[in-house]
Amino acid sequence: MSKYSIKDIAAMAGVSIATVSRVINNKGKYSEETKEKVLKIINQTGYKVDGSAQSLKTNITFTIGILVPDIKNFFFADLVQKIEKELFDKNYSTIICNTDSDEEKEKSYLRMLENKKVDGIIVISGAKQGFRFESSLKNIPYICIDRKPADFNKTIFISSNHELGAQDAANYLLDHDVQRPAMVIRKHSPILNGRINGFRNSLEEHNIVFDRKENIFCFNGITSLTKYLSTYPETDGFFAIDDRLAIELIMALKQIGKKVPDDIQVIGFDNIPADEIISPTLTTIAQNTDKIAHYTIENILKVIKTPNESGDQILIPTTLVKRNSTF
Image (tube, rainbow, N blue to C red; front, side):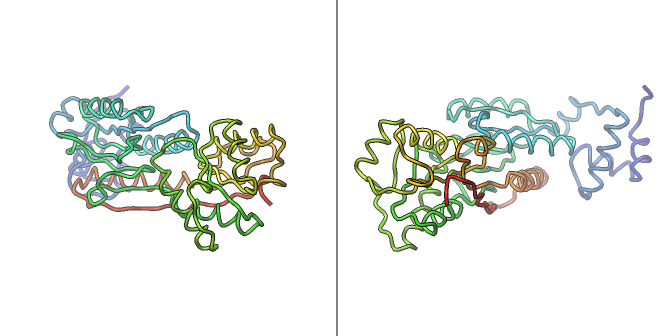
């Protein structure tokens, strides 16, 4: 293979040697179009930048870390795959870290990413009190997606609008003959409060007094379902906090002789592939992972280039997908 020089790369890209140098070192001014053109030529020619020397000189590695709480979760897997693909297309490599929603594991991965000298970190945190950086990690640019950071003023946060999505789900039930709705949860989740707020807002808009004992049901198998329905037998609509729970709920309702949607209507949240396999198929709230991924890439690259960006919140609308578990 012929060896190419920085002069060759500049000529092939139609830019100056100085511009190629700025792109490689991620310094100075240049357009995103110019950056992509130069990096594409570098990839096509196999031009080798002395990575270790570059890193020591500029602290640029073209590597981004991604923290994810549960890579088995379809929503997270789908989102992370789209983020990774778009970053790869922009000539960034990724280090994907599955934290299992374990705060100590999350901290351990953060230290590892710091040692790897990543350029930035995309955080989907499993921390119950909201994500925050500690000690020297504050020097690494980062953004948070889906799970709220502890400090909104200093962090860019990108997420679906969980509150409005839950409100849309409850509104749909109440607008389709449900009189006694309940929200179904399983355990604490960082997105739980937003969805509960949306559910409660819908009830209040429909002049229904929100009673946490009646309107929030913690599902833990058939026994818990039977007990809940014996206490609140007029329940005729369930909004499950996620689709996996909604599917388990439908199966449990069948086992105790309840028909969906005739006896009880069910709506989920996430729009996972299994929604179209379960019988009846599941009405759900879909998150727009394409848009979340797009804004994530746009903003992580922005904070890498301009580390002192102020905090911002970007909420992506959700969409209700009507199927057969509701009328």
